View 1: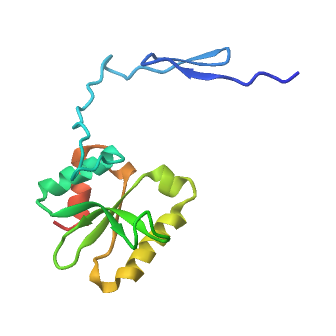
View 2: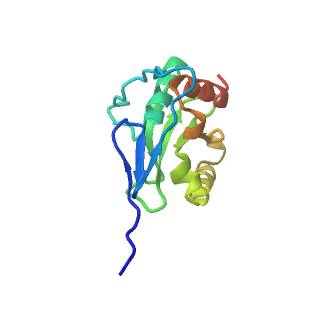
Length: 160
């Protein structure tokens, strides 16, 4: 007879977690029983395209705030339809050369052992466009937990 595997269950917003027949209680924060959460802006389409993540939306808000012109989801080298093509998250029209900006989730692009994919895509883009683009920028989602943090990172990376 096979042993039963433990079941991990989280119920709504409660502080009780169960694993099999064991019960774990999440500790409450010290000093306060309620933590006010920051209200983030609602995710809306960017240039008629719905962003894949809130970080992409926040990056667009930062670019609007910096008054930078950009193209969202720019298809290069054939885009998704061509072999070897790709879609750049933001193609920012900076002076004197445009800057490709990638919004990279830590898990899918680095933690899952896929860092070579991201580095290869950037190397292909640089070799294809050569000196007609600025150095591509990667923004990791772990460095931008809020819209204000995204604004600061975008401003620093694009040197505005």
